[in-house]
Amino acid sequence: MKKLILTLLITGQIMMAATIQYIETNGLKVPVIFENDKRLPLVTMQFVFQNSGSITDTDKAGLAKFSARVMSEGTKKLGSSAFAESLESKAIHISSSTGKETFVMEVGCLKEEFSEGLKKLSDLLKDPNFSEEAVSKVKTTTMGALSSKANDFDYVASNELKAVLFKGTPLANPASGTLDSVKSIELEDVKAFVKKHLVSSRLIVVVGGDVDIDAAKVEIEKIIKTMPKGELTPLAHYEVSKKASESILKRDTEQAYVYFGSPYNIEHDSDEYYKARVATFILGTGGFGSRLMEEIRVKKGLAYSAYARVSVTKSSSFMTGYLQTKLDSLEDAQKTVKEVVAEFVKKGVTKEELDQTKKFLLGSEPLRVETMSQRLNRTFMEFYKGQELGHSVKELELISELKLKDLNEFIKSHKEILEMSFAIVTK
Image (cartoon, rainbow, N blue to C red; front, side, top):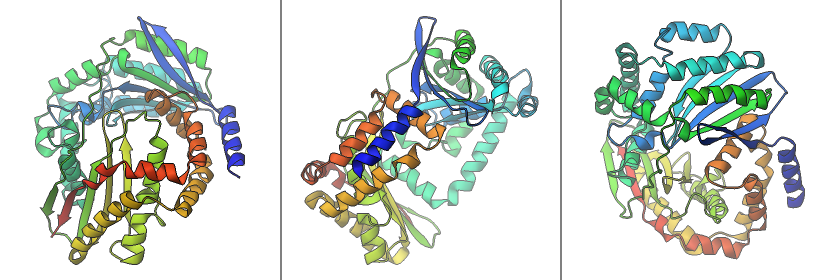
């Protein structure tokens, strides 16, 4: 059964695989991740700038995301409304967004409008709406959104956990910033961010859809040539605080919001990451049947749901989890989380748990690669992490062959997850 699933997966990926090509210009070799898909006459393209996300917010929290919103305000020549109208008339979509480590500008359109979409993107990169009016508008909407989240206690607890785990680093800051930090952002800050980060030396291009990639590369190269070259600076790596701590925030709430996290000592390109994936699924990512859900919801009825997951990126590696519980069961819920994780590290998992996890991860894999965007994203992540193409398929093979003894040795070697910090919102 496992061999059949893997054969189907491998065959499917070969038939509809994304590839990596390059555009050589201005002394650079810019990667282009491409997948051809002619099922619909649509094209999507992303300019992904590495080492340019919220992790760069060292001075003013939220600056990266704020800058992305300004870049969504059209060109200075046309202004926000006229630029938006020029896109809408041709059903072209252009947006800017940020992740923790990346800044992304995306174009989506019909096949016949792709050249026009590229022209609009070029106009935006050359003449962004750097005006006091645009900055004021973004500041108002951002501060309004932040104010509305003051009573979103999941948001509050999640941000507080980051502040506890990554104290004194950019990762301790909310990606959208705070009211004070956003208020302090000025036009010159946005200009400086864009000048430093939206440069060709940081660029990875992602293209998918019904498009002639050779013709598209010619058009994309023209845009790259007009961009400043800049430089790709090393990405900082931040360690989670090794000393467990607890932060309790008092709010007018009818529920307790419990967020927890700990170090997880594994590199983003580790050969053992697949073991972490299986282990965390059994502990808390797998929903019903996971250790946390079984103990906290099924056996004790302390919460509707409880999760734990691992985040492993170039800039950080840690485990986090969360649950909501009644105010009077907060202590029991917190104690139970600690006990479940301690038991997990001490004794590992059972053969039945491993077998069930293998069946789920292998059986559900086609759902994770059924759309073009999913496949493009997977290829992008393989390339971004320095892995060879098709690494995800090899990872499935490793999971299918994983022995109970090896998994439990791996689990028992990661005692650092016992050093759990908590951020709790309660009454």
